[in-house]
Length: 354
Image 1 (cartoon, rainbow, N blue to C red):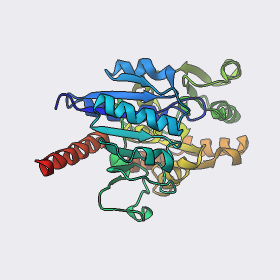
Image 2: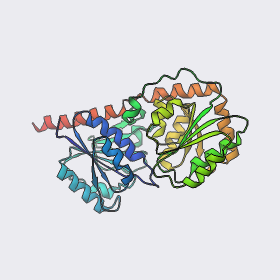
Image 3: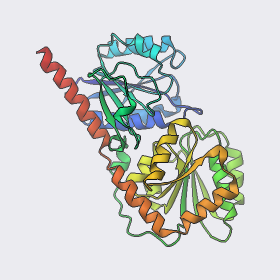
Image 4: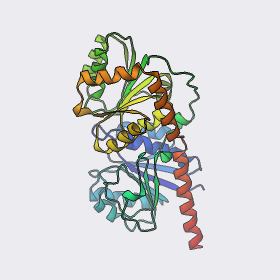
């Protein structure tokens, strides 16, 4: 087991957010539990290097434009130099051309896919935790690729898995509201949500807003928090997200990886879609009543958004249903299942060679 190396190629930033890197940290944690080595290859996301190193992982830097042929060549060289057993690609900028450069890779390849509309390169594992993911959406199948589909493969970091709490009851009114839109929130939905909550002026709410390392609207948000009629507080790049979620009666978030964390933590949630890759998951969570799907951010007026918030805040039966359905979708063992599959594939290959 020692000596096995996992190379993760992922990026983070103001536009692409932090989700790719953060969920890969969960995979790295599960891989390292086997006593093996992990390297993150980053072209963007220097602000997350300290977080990655805190997990015992190494950092390698890609000096080329993310997703470029030069990027692929550098990644290939890193695989060879590190004697990587597996390479993980997580990001939308890894094109078919990028993958073709890696075709003669000796390492096995895992591709994180957030939507079957993406092109797929030849790989050993396709991982798509979308609740509505289906093998029928992948017509190009060569018999080599394993498809790990659905929220049972959602990657949750150790801080969530190790959290110990018990949600004893659902209050009549959701007084404690958590607002989080990931590491960057380029469209400043955090501020838009706070403004909508201000319209609900007959309820006194405790509103916790979490802004990530890539958030770029600090002055405007700080001003709005100071003027809020609610008990609002703003946290920057919070490290204790499980504790914040455990205290919340309701969460308002985007349709990314945070949804799976909230589902595991049994927090009723309202999802606002901010990108195309989030739309399918948001719709599915909404369809099975595991969340309230508020729709696209661009179509939401503050008054309509406030009405939607009020309905959920004041309906304990709905919030109870959301929690029960979401908790059945995500059990926290996704990263473990993925690593077990990776090791089984590697072991099978070694047996064939022997």
